[in-house]
Length: 369
Image (tube, rainbow, N blue to C red):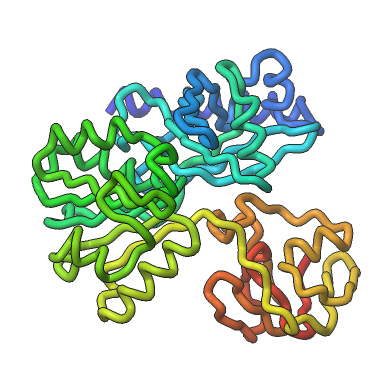
């Protein structure tokens, strides 16, 4: 009792001193001054230092990060937002840790694919080096393993979507999970499979883990060839109706798996996460005006996402992933109809919170920006 009684005033004093220092630092946060000395010394901001860089395939880079003390860890399958300054402008993107969730060293492992039009991924692939300091968010996302763990699991990934499901696999192996696990990964060729040696080693060392490699552009090697279909599902996991499936990959793979599971009537067994830019809106749907009421700006509806239209109008709404994942760009729609370009759903409710990066206006729309 006495320890708790004396610690509260001490904690209160520390908080008061911190508030005083931050007030003295106005107009900038205290961390803005500390980063001039060393960017890894922060009061509130969470950052991470790159301590290792590996390039295992031609278009991917694996970064091992050491977060600052504010890091609270993650659950396998979740994502983090990574921020990097490029040409004086801070850009943020979402990536999933690939290591096991109970990592004892406190490090975070990210494998990033350099997409042709990906500004951040291209920059990190070309320029990441030990000592580089990045902004980092706390982990978020609902794409996680349930507890207790399912008796049977099918983990399906494609391309860079391997990272969250690999984290799940590593976590299950660390926990000595005894249930059946099939890891099905799609790639163009064998040379495009990140973590190939480790995947084979995990399957060899754990009798309950089955590794299945499917190549879409290579007709030899691997276990399957071509794109996902029910024949692939029947071949690798005939017990699929009695299992939980976790899926992350490019849009084509995501659509293919969803369609098969929908036809089989087992969509409730499928859990998904996807990191892909919003699809282009259908032609012919543009029309009307977009009103940014808080700014007094009105523009013709170009048919682009509302985030892109706001930026084209000279506004600077907050955003993060630009993929409909992080919810940083959520804004209140005052009126009008919008369409979610990822799901195809339309929304006509007034005073409704929507995500700008995956919403396009259908006719006149007013936003609280």
